Image 1 (cartoon, rainbow, N blue to C red):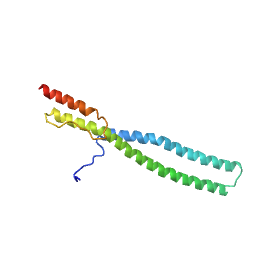
Image 2: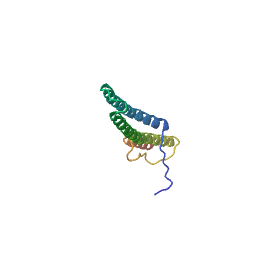
Image 3: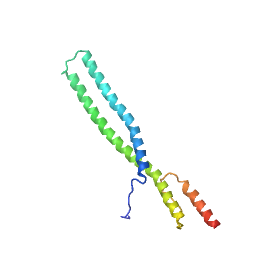
Image 4: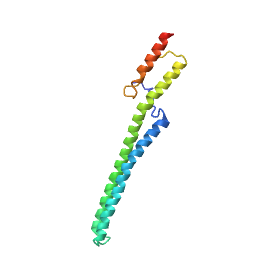
Length: 146
């Protein structure tokens, strides 16, 4: 394996960070809803206890508080894991879009400088796989006319 392989995680930082930010923002909506629902649910249970005139030190309230804390911790862990997954998937998705565009830009700039290049190719799992054949056909036909 080639040890000189460089990993570039942000090919087009402005675009990629914007995609990731949108994905994180969309994920925060249901996460926030779960936290609000959690707060409301346990507040409502405490109100029921107060309505039936339980003492504030009653075991019912300690039980409710304990369950609330446990569920809150589960929500926090799940939310952090979900955000990590969203960021990683957002980076992967944006990479499959930004990579081909960057490759096309570099290829076209080299052609503009008159460099003789091999066919344009994108990575196997990149988007826009239909673009290289079109560009390659155009370049081939243009060079035949010369």
